[in-house]
Amino acid sequence: DAKTTQPNSMESNEEEPVHLPCNHSTISGTDYIHWYRQLPSQGPEYVIHGLTSNVNNRMASLAIAEDRKSSTLILHRATLRDAAVYYCILRGRDDKIIFGKGTRLHILP
Amino acid sequence: NAGVTQTPKFRILKIGQSMTLQCTQDMNHNYMYWYRQDPGMGLKLIYYSVGAGITDKGEVPNGYNVSRSTTEDFPLRLELAAPSQTSVYFCASSSDRPNQPQHFGDGTRLSIL
Image 1 (cartoon, each protein chain N blue to C red):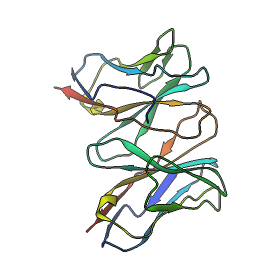
Image 2 (image 1 turned 135 degrees about the vertical axis):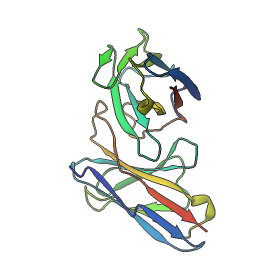
Image 3 (image 1 turned 120 degrees about the horizontal axis):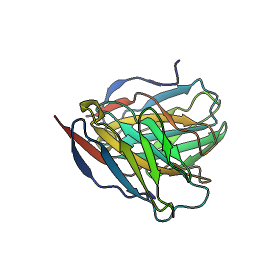
Image 4 (image 1 turned 45 degrees about the vertical axis):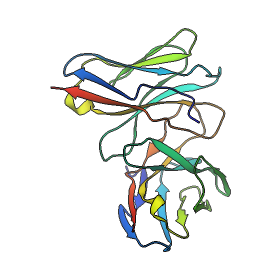
């Protein structure tokens, strides 16, 4: 089973920030938190990852709770092209990488 | 940059036929994975491999076989196709370091009629 829990779907208005939550209460100390997104009719693509500290890159920001049991992917200014399914996964010593159902993000123009 | 290449992109099979989905990567990654994705659903892990000659079952291995004779290639075999195997199949690869991402192919859309 997936080690993460995400809302099934979320909506946001275009040009507004989006906060996508992920719960991972059973995370171990060596697990990295990875986020991927899947655009319609495409394979998943890497967005960002982190271990303990918050992370920023050109696509998004990742905020990690102090106890690491949850994290939030932040899209600072959503566009219509950000409409996708977003997956939060844990990657650690276990070689298996299990995806959950992800969050389907709808962007309203 | 080729990355992860999957062939074919589309295929229609009849029930009971066999086929092999091909996956190759040029990033010298040790880890490779096969996932299936049914319409409107998330990805399910079928099989994975941590290196040449080593494979292991994922969440939904029944009806599939894999082999890993080289670092680059990780083919997925369907021996007796069934309608329940109609899905989109994604191959992925990664290094063995947990702070490195997976790289996905574009997928193979398989219909079994």
